[in-house]
Image 1 (cartoon, rainbow over the protein chains, first blue to last red):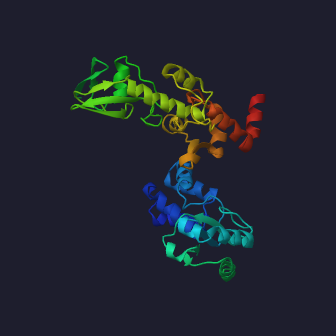
Image 2: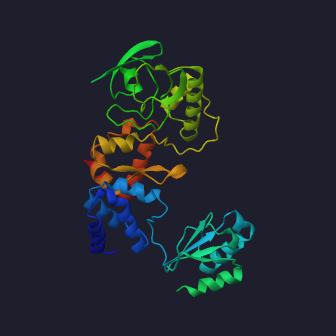
Image 3: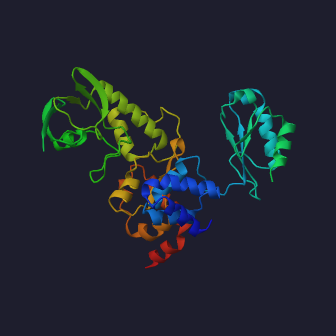
Length: 150
Length: 203
């Protein structure tokens, strides 16, 4: 991510330290992760110490300090999805992409996370890709869904 | 400043407005054990060891004396059966993290705490925040901070700042009740700036 763009985002929030969280969220949504140089720049411009920014960036799960893939795959392993076979879905996805939950593949195509409930248990097992919910999944259907994303 | 009169352990004490129970007790020469308190730093209320019983309007409640402000006509008890029992448990929980800390061992002796009561999860840091707060509030270098949250929370040096500032400062080192801070520093040094420390030790 270019430093100019980071400066633009900071200026949009008038460079106020109280907007730190919103600035980080904007950078996260645009860049998918928070590189260290960017955090350094934010710290410099807002005059907020880097240790505080690091505290916040590691506290919230919305932020990532490592590169994320272009597509975020969230697999529900909550109770309802679990009894409907979420572990088999998870195994299928792990095999198909070759990564474990919390990881990102080498071409930065997919990031895999497990979540505890997406709030639509009637559709279980649920897989969410880039915010789009795919319900009533089976291992075969899951592989097909993954093929849609490039 | 308004003066506030109340009672600690049967002694009548006077506090000025805005003083915490702990400060008032210390000025009256009454000892309350603490781990995360430091006179130069803002109250933090992390270790909970300074817990005391406060009786007001006939009701008793448990408060943490380092963040509880003095009030008129309250009765404070710093050692009671209940308080001792709670402190014992707090010490035992902290000792699951740092069983070899001399400060904790002394406290354990005083309160009869068993260091093996809880299964060990030796992270060595008890999150008192002394190093983090001292670096932010007193030396204003912000070379160390907390990262992550909940059970994963830990202290972490910012290598860029630590490389420049820490070798000449190290004021936080004696504050750490468990010596984990020193270990964290050595690890950061070894990983992030080993060359500078070597050239300095030669001088």
